[in-house]
Length: 476
Picture (cartoon, rainbow, N blue to C red):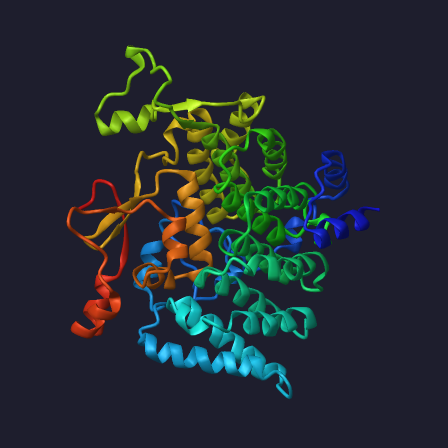
């Protein structure tokens, strides 16, 4: 019966919202095997810890992305320094090869898909896709359906997500949603299920889906999390659960009011704080912080202000400590905040010999930050050392990552685009610009065309011009 429910939910596009069913499946599935099922080489990347993982543009394998790791990412050689003309030629060739599927070998298709993904990650090349999106999605769908190898399948799924974030086409979600949902449900490769979950969230966000589809998918993702992956046949798979949590957080940033869902969602996330995998715990904790943050919204013009003694001083440090008094609590994110605080504080000071030092450090740092938001959602995203993360864009402006919704959107896009995120921004990818509308431009300044800059400057100087830099608020 459970299999029939799962198939109906996936094939119809509707999700099962019966919490009793999901709770039953959650209790039935054990977390005891989470550690043994996790990848031996999986790494946790915490917001406060530097990231030493080789990203290599192969971000479909990455989950939690650190805001502090952006420095290392941008200082690495992940940027593709080839001109966009060269990349366009390579992309066009890979598309031609993918469309000529007849007589092609597995190796040749994998090479074409790798080239396709590399080009769309490195630069904003929407004009190369114009007029060919339908054919491209058709070819990619064949690779996903055939599941000849795990590599071809996951590369094709990632190519679908890259197409959605590159070109504005409101028909993409409707075209690929059934395919991605079937992959999530029925793929023989657990990693492909995880990649498909991430791709589905990307296509919902950039491929023309409406708020109804977002809300249905949030319920679906919650079913995956609540059942420890068994809802889609990935029992106790920490990668699948982590990606489902990350996708939930990303999509939740796009829903204005989560009052009706907050209680059940936080209840499920609290259960995952007992998981054996650190990435699962941190992703669940960050979603809890997001939902507490979203229970507060800006004060309306006709609403009364706080009492005078509660007004926040103009001093920046004082504002950061007390939080934004212009934010008004609209509902209780969870019925027992004391229970939530006890749980996140215990993880912030976790002492155990069964966990490696790096995971323990990342859990301590992450949950110290999460606890601050749960205790006072007005503070948004604020680390326990009172630092404020800022991404400065050369001399054009800055973006303060001071809210959980900003972090989750930035992390989701960077998981897909990696270092190419910088190029997509400067080359005018409207999908990226619309998702991160927090750029403060200096008076009279504007973002110059990187193609014009490239024509006038050497490659090295151009690379410095377009670079994002992560700095503390007090740095100069």
